[in-house]
Length: 485
Image 1 (cartoon, rainbow, N blue to C red):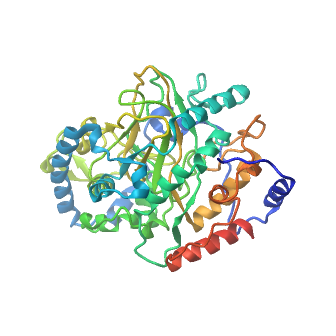
Image 2 (cartoon, rainbow, N blue to C red):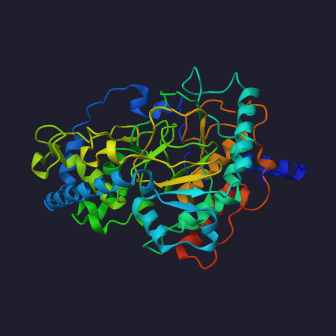
Image 3 (cartoon, rainbow, N blue to C red):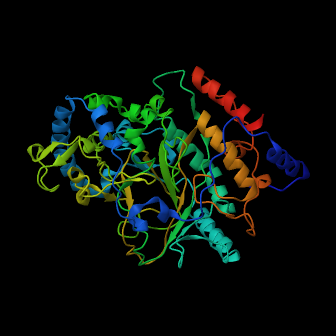
């Protein structure tokens, strides 16, 4: 359980938190009110904008002649991967029974998860409990119907809600924490001095979705979270693809966190830009849902290979049309400012036109049938989408809950997120406004029970990790100072 009886002592502690001196970092800029439509050009209807000339200079500065052979190799390997994924369909996504997280699992499953970067976790949260969360959210929205915002505006299905009791209970649920601990344990820091504690799970408040049968408006096409042009433009982010940009794409390690810690994921103050390091995006199902029922789609192609293709794609252009896929049908393109699917202040989008060799019509596969309480996670570099139409007979509902470790930057975000949680305001990565500050029945911090639940929300200090690297120990110590001094 995530709640407990309020006490005067607890209430007093939150008054002190509100009065805590701000950490030595500028607070994030308040964003305008809005919805998830402001994050995607495909939802907002905005047309592509020509990029400044500096993006041509950027391509020239990154270019190495060895990338021609890398491009040739990547295109060749993709042909085989496309055939493999097309044959498997939804079975290309690994499935992991929750009980195996504690009891042990086959090495084959682990290898598959790391290869494709996504996983379905069956069980953990009892089905009845997940359904109670959904009903609680509906009751909360009904009690505050005049203030609820979301997309689409006239029939909200993606809710700008962050502080309901059900969402908080789900984030704090032991099964979700244990799953996230398992996922973060798949990562490693090549530099033991890296300031990240993979053993310290932190909460990142996000939205929820209750999608109705027949809906075709919430049609998120293939995309990648964590910025867009930032992947190439920001030197820290670009360092994550060091091996790819040096012509050695097979040496790329998607699970090495050390180069990720200096990356700027949001250079343009995007309405939905994620400013924390979020290695695994995820959601928890509140419905029985399967393929063609408005569910998630992912690209379960070899993650290293797909990433190499995406990072190399801006350097090349089709000789004729993008539908011609052979190496000889493509030419070097360093003069244009074009970064396919990339734009300023948006997320990175992909299509059969911008990234034709991925053959997304064949390789974007739907998540398999899920029950309430099942979880789905995907690596931050995995291409994913939402089915364009919900053909099912009942709602397709999820809570967006990722797996996030403690870092120094994440701790700074957690300070601000905690303050907004206390006040009922939207988290700073999301559209602003008064949010749920005047809502009836929202979750109050003093009702979160002691221990791990309060720690991941920044309401109690994180415990010192046992047997951790020097960087991890230093991260917890510094983060606690940021949060409570």
